[in-house]
Image: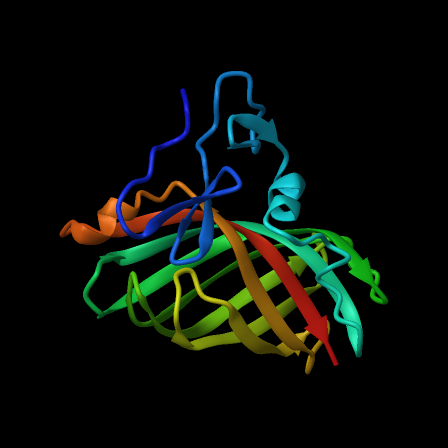
Amino acid sequence: MGGRRTRGPVALLVAGLATVSGVPVLGTAAVGAAAGDTVVAGAVVSDAAVVRAAGRSAADALPADAAELGCLMRGNVAFSPGVTGDPQYLEMRISGSLYECQGTTPHAGGEFRGATSGTMSCSGGDAKGSIEITWDGRNSSVVDLAAGDVGELPPTFQGRVSRGALAGRAVTLRVEAVDGVDPEDCAKPRGVTAMAVYGSAEFTT
């Protein structure tokens, strides 16, 4: 099965990646793709390659100053109600993984789960909430996150670890690419109800 075709003014084809409001949208899995793989311009690639194709790697996630940890990120977001062209209050349930982590901490990766809420549309909005990260199946971090004045969907979240491992560190979650989104859903009453996300996470002092 090939990737979903995107059309209309919010869909732009750049280097084989369709974009929604500037965020790359990747094709759906094709015959021969392994679990967790994604198709970019007809080629099956790994999650790590997906993020690098969007312009970043785990090493890129580490800023030059005060860096402690940088990870690649993949996850799933569910919207209730769906995101449409009109601003409305909604909730987002988030889950996923941090992996290929690099930095000065012993964390190699982790699983996260949480929720945010706010007023959003396909043009942007604001949201805030929290996630809990379980590092390497052992200790955990609770991260309070917020995104305001967002000009594109999905947003970049900024926040801080409120308790647990890495407490007090600033956190930035960047979405570099999304999957499973049809831009035309923004004009439908049901809207965009879910998407897969790929990106990076930074933890700094």
